[in-house]
Image 1 (spheres, rainbow, N blue to C red):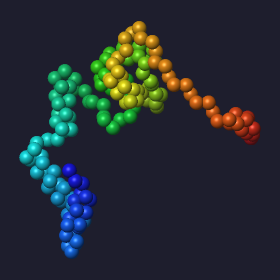
Image 2: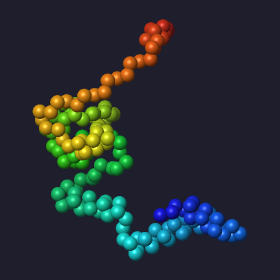
Image 3: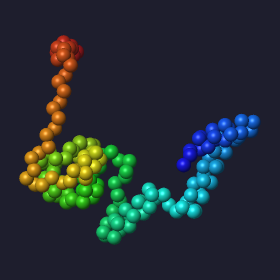
Image 4: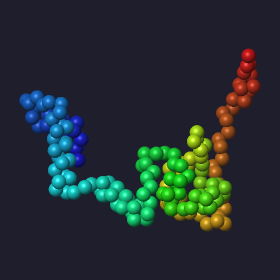
Length: 153
């Protein structure tokens, strides 16, 4: 669907002699959105949101879901998304370094990217070899000498 700015630009190109109000594109966009909802029903994102809510309620969890916009999840939110037990499975994954943890002011957090990676790859079995972390890049040459040369008053 065209954004309001694109609608206004198209109108101005189609009718160069006419002066349009800035709100014209927004009004046409909103009307098109209302018509789409009325005749086509809810969008896929709206239907998925309803479906996830219904599944959570059916499973007996009236819990809040982790926000899609959150980059760092609490351990509880990560476990809820992965469908694993926080006391045993998550603790084992963290201890075996299969999942990365970030220290935050209110406890440890798990990056959403780690949860998505585990969701794609699957939860490794208890006897799996820990995941190898990529080696750190060495510091640029001469940095150590410059640090040692610093004089602290």
